[in-house]
Length: 572
Image 1 (tube, rainbow, N blue to C red):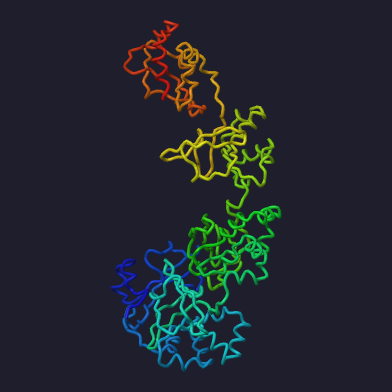
Image 2 (cartoon, rainbow, N blue to C red):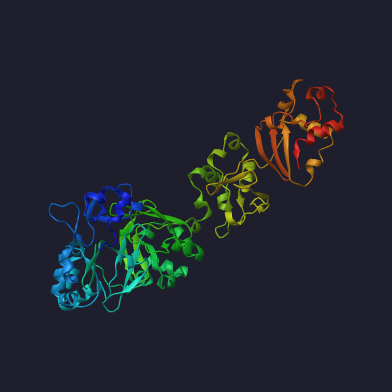
């Protein structure tokens, strides 16, 4: 009978192959290794696994065998008992140890078993001292070890659900099952490399390592492991140590003592005094799912318990975190998850001080804060929000400003409170370190503070917080003549299009105003009661019939004409 990984996989991947090679299943093999992976048509990783080239192979599907002179695997394979089937799938070391430990009689007899049988290579990978200890005491230890690889019922891979536990035949200790979306199935993080070999009294799955009994939680491991003593201290101080002992399905990337030693001592001391930062730090190392190393075939982003994402990938046989090889030891299996030891501490933004968040693209801003003494003014225990301009905002004009004036400008880029994006709303007023208030504007596709909008998680502000009008004297004189100065001093939300002196100087008798053709050389100059855009031409009220030049030649204008023309420059 056709089981999981049957030839139906090939119908969509290679429509011709099943016609000429019946009952063959496709798998990928990493070039230069013995590692093979069954997969599904949606999970072919562009000819590579963990960055290494992979080739496609075809083998007989479970339950079928080759016949001389015939294509594919046309014959139904004979069914044997579990003991005989272990030999048929070339797990001969497990078969020999079953005979040596007196397990053979049991798995040849009546019953219905699932045997997760280690391959020959899996036994070779086992620590020699451990292996010798098992073999030398065959009547007890080896028998118990093999029993831990067995379940007292038949389980095909389709029955092995992600996150399930099943009871082994050794002291009723559990086996932890994970069935991943890429087709990989693991038992205590050992990968099934040959599945669903049906026997008369059960089923055999060949796995890639010898598994050992699991009885400790993640909390137990970090509390007794000498190389994780600093992590244990951090977890205890954060108040989360007991969480690591609760039932669940966690992955912990556990920094070693050496990893913490790489941190600046001041940073570690600061973290130890701040429980919230410690919790953020620890939760950034935790996933709410079990990610065994053998299931990772390419880079994937996962959300941590802290809320930010990290990318778990692989490079050959090495696990990577955020693209960096930092995993020292993989797959320490516990009752509530798996631990991977890493040689670096992962630092989330939520555990950093505000100045530590400033990146290279805002390096000038950071340097200016230090140079002007503002970084020292931000007290360590207080909360701030930086509105950090990009380096390009610091042009020659800004850098040539008087230092005292520039300091005031930068003080208005520091909010007194800790504000995150989700807390901003339209019309909100945010107090700065200088005592000024900045307004929040929420648009359909942007959130802005005054004239600056959010870019990739940072606030980009033009460093123009005061507005002067040295190049629009004619416009200001006309506003005064029209009696409109008081209008622009009123409270409200106005938008002013202010013609520059150049707009008046370049007029001819044939000039007429059309709003849709006006260019705006300078925009988003914020005022307390609105915003100003400078324009190079006058905005003429449509349908009023005024020509600009005759009006200018009739200086001074009639007040009603001036009001009509210049009210058209103000949006209420």
